[in-house]
Image (tube, rainbow, N blue to C red):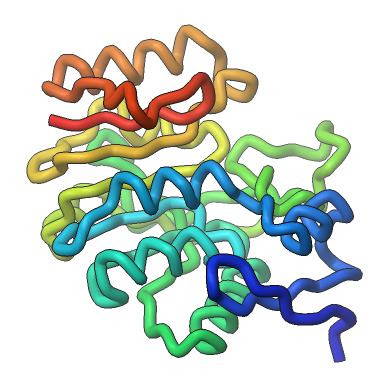
Length: 227
């Protein structure tokens, strides 16, 4: 039996593992501050009829907020850490939701999909990422996960929205991607992990593709773009 209890955020019941989750995350979940900005952006930007590809499922709270707006069949979510994804899936079931959430990493047409990559799991699960290594204090382990083609997933879902919080992976994923059909992108930025220059290059690519900042919801850490 796992130590912990259920917490309620935004009307959703989520399991809080008080032993396995980082103490800061335990506090954030208990006081309702967990991923507050991501949740705000999802509620502000998404509309009924949107079809969403999410990267970075974590415990699934942002995913459930999105599903409440667009419908559970209209979102596909990807997570690199299989353990935390299992918690997300349990949270979905706990709240009566059937959401397609997959263990894997998205990559664009410039990189080979269908292969496996290693993903670094952090003790602070929101910081798990591709480039996390043993040199990082929060490193727990590396796991092998499959890759999925972003362009294929956009086409299969007929997606018009991308919503990513993937700890720096957004730079390689979005730069050079075929974003046909995408009208809105909400992406958390991580220049501390990938550098200001690479982050700006990614934003420059999106600008060249016709995306413009939605100033109402863009902040230093989170970019919302529309075309």
